[in-house]
Picture 1 (cartoon, helix red, strand yellow):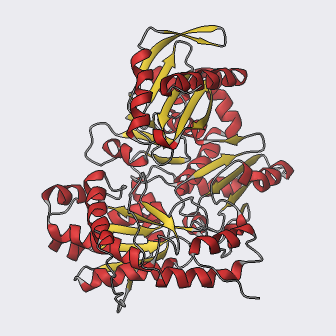
Picture 2: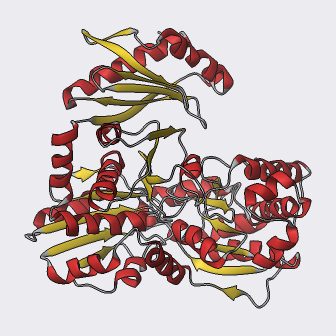
Picture 3: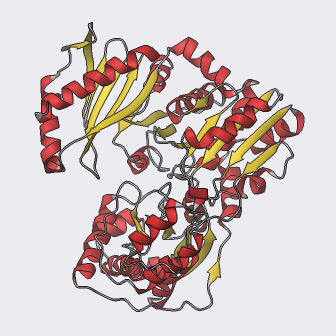
Length: 543
């Protein structure tokens, strides 16, 4: 008996409840995606616009967002052109736009909708096919393209589609650009605009992986030959879990085939085997089991998200989250490779990297959450060049590298670490913490009443910033801690005299308060969390 669905949302619910049984229902999703012309609110968050395929991420709405971008191009707004890194619309037409997608359902079809509209306006467009986010970033620079349109929702579940826009420096679009896209797109949405599709003709293609390889070789942040020698000469084994994403096949092209590298989940699967395609500890179970079974001297396991901009590492002793790996990257790039500059980290990341930077006399820059906030420390002409940029949500880039976070870079850097230090990752991390101190980061949060969302919640939480000044005493489970530093770039972060800290910030997308904490022992984490929650409930007036 054929199931009937009155919405894509109800169909997705059935599909995701049993992906193997209901995989054939993707044809129903395609029908909704093509026929549904209902408007959606377009919001470019920390990494583009995202929506459910067939519900708000539809063919008409992708065409509307593309049309909004074209309108922005043609306006020749000086502020937008400056942010884009171009002189005017004519330069955009000649330099062109790279368009591609990750491995999501209907990715190629959605991409060709954008290409058709761009070509209609005389804008040169290259089709990249399935590609990773860092490949778009490097490809823009290598081709001197005006920008890119990358259709990916990053690590979101299988029912999502997404739309990333990158200007000519290869980094995520800033608010000068995204606000203009939102304004134009939402005006068209409010007018219930239906945009006819334009079939692209004589599509030009580009191999972004080849451009990425040239980029890495030219930038010389990573020593590809040292990595190859390590693989050829050492007793090592590496597992790379692509989780069916666009990163598949990339490492083979960069460093060549090796019997010592084993690739997991590389087949086509729009539904990711029913798992959330993110670099989580729970998704690494197979990797950690394989690492534990191996008798090799050197062992490395990594997991990536679908568009290849997030990564998590492991060896046979522990899973190494980005809070730790980012600190290791700084130590390695500065101490072992001699790169100098500043440390750029989002404010919610571990202070292990702060301890390293302070002892090595390196400046620290803490930014708001969102990789786009690292741009001032990554562009070529900056006076404060970042040695490493990373955020606790599994994103990293490094000296002279892409302005986007890059999981491929994360893989190559980890292998080179082993090659140079002669150690697996966890012993190297232990050596670093023996020298600079032990730190135990974590995160949590609480839901709040919907009436508190937005500015109301933000204003209530501001009481914490006003109540706890530098020098204030805070009781943490009977231990008296002095507030050494107050950081307010994104919520309120209180750093205590023993190096522990807590950060409280409102969610930007839902009625929740996020807690980011770090204790100096594993046992103290619970007490720091309890303190963060107590401060929050007092501030918002909740029992």
